[in-house]
Amino acid sequence: MTDISTAATPAPAIPEGVTVVTHPLVQHKLTIMREHDTSTASFRRLLREISLLLAYEVTRDLPLTTKRIETPLAPMEAPAIEGKKLALISILRAGNGLLDGILELIPAARVGFVGLYRDPETLRPVQYYFKVPSQLEDRICIVVDPMLATGNSSAAAVDLLKQAGARDIRFLCLLAAPEGIARMRAAHPDVAIVTAAIDSHLNDHGYIVPGLGDAGDRMFGTK
Ligand code: URA
Image (cartoon, rainbow, N blue to C red; front, side, top):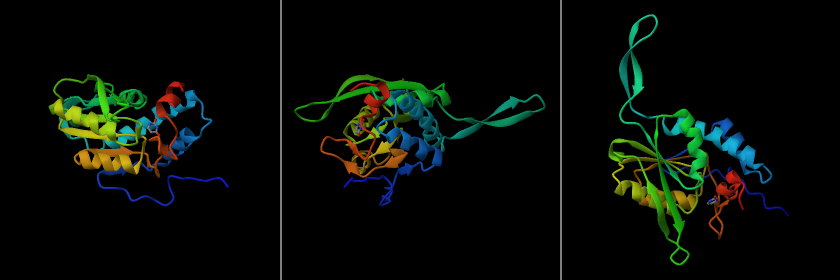
């Protein structure tokens, strides 16, 4: 008999600090991305499209100010986002799939990259690349990684950003495992998480089930 795993049954409780974007367009596109025979080209296009919709949610509460402008008819005080440009921080390499779409929506955002690999002996994340915008303490940072699995690399990336001065950090992913959410909430309760779905669990290899497989491989056509 086929074991049918779904993300939706039973409906998982949504932990504090986590937003699940249940918009039908997001859910529909995610379903196509999950299918094993979806092509690399479609996967990449759908990820870019979903990233725009997720970006809408993760930026919902950005502080606004007003600025004086002139329309063709009259002057007005018009709303504008307050403060320094946002910092988008991509966790390499799969984070870049979310990054491209968000940059279309927020082209002036500054961009940083965090590269981490898992030490095969200790299984702990080790940093191999870290390049982030200046003045992180004055910016809202949005960390992007499609898969919040164990949460170890996400938590480590946020540690590094905090050491670099970041104070206002949000985490954006496509799929989250309960284990990854628990890890992130324990390590960084101040970091809000936005995701399109919370799946059932991690398997023994650290993959999200039912998930969508290896996001980086599916996005870049590698194996
Ligand atoms: N990273 C992935 O790409 N997929 C998973 O399921 C877990 C981590």
